[in-house]
Image 1: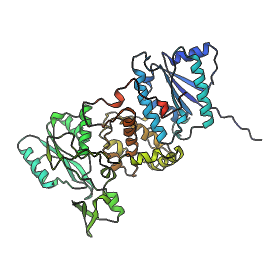
Image 2 (image 1 turned 90 degrees about the horizontal axis):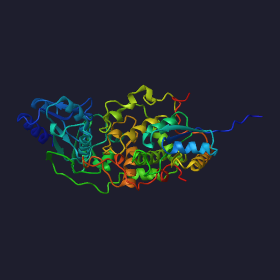
Image 3 (image 1 turned 30 degrees about the vertical axis):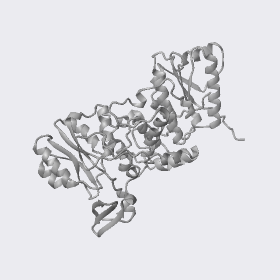
Image 4 (image 1 turned 135 degrees about the vertical axis):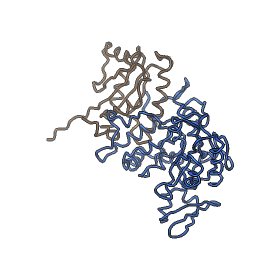
Length: 145
Length: 323
């Protein structure tokens, strides 16, 4: 009998300090479950997410990357998420153009009060990426440990 | 054309308007026209060349020349003037240090296309009425210009100069229906798997010579991520996979919204990778998402990634799935 290892994806979630990271906290303190495959990286603002961070995550073996920030209009720094939104729109469109499955990238606006939305989003995203399987199209053997 | 350019350059040198001239000279081969700086009338008369192989965009060389000081005369084709404006917008060159002579352009020859036609031993080229007469050591060959023209010239977006102090030849118009996005649309219509295979085939040929970066007028940072060994993307991939795509995504994104679509990246690529298709995708997206924008058209325009609208579309509509 061959031992078949169940595939667990690696998901990187960039969460803004003021909304989505607090949303993740609320999900935790409300005891709402979401898979442990999601690795949260706290950033001061969604605008801090350099498009290179997304590529870097994929390069180092992430199977899906999600960026979560304050709702448009609610940015702690007034306008950061508006700029981030433009950047990610362009980057994700380019990844799609190169044939990288568009389901591996996602942007979600989650406020500090939306613990339930955080858990729901992460559950959905992990399920989508698990169904897609391992990230082969953006992996980089130079960076794999 | 060449005589008129030399004559005017000599005049401007001698009356002291400029102290040197940025133009083209013959490089290693007769078809290999390389940018050069001329400092005297003799230099110009002996070395200066302008013909249908002079494809190089001279605007990037102005960055270095501006650091050196003095006043520089430069010859710019219509597409080069977009890069020129963009460099001014980014404060990389100083307008008052440069004297621009705009030159009319009917499109430049692609040496690879000529070679594919079996034309070897090239010693010169002349164009007249849409026909190239290519001089070779075996005698002259005539080719229809549109058969041997570079792709970027066949889909030329503008024959109008965006900036100049004086003109040699007539100023043209912006070409509204240039069809430069045709191939991008074709790719967009494919399935993701087909697109992936297409790009794998193209980008895996990349040898990471960095020529596209070095020639690009928009890639003018003094410190570059690709020179940083800690970036993980500074060297050639060691295995035969699709790792080179990382380099090209990053490079295209760094010039997104600033690329004027001058097509130099594709011209210099020794592996003939159609790099302009990446840049044109970004230009097409920017036009579709946030309104028409041509980098370099107006040096005072705000770049598309440096401004926003409250009602901008969500990334999910084009990238990930949105709940």
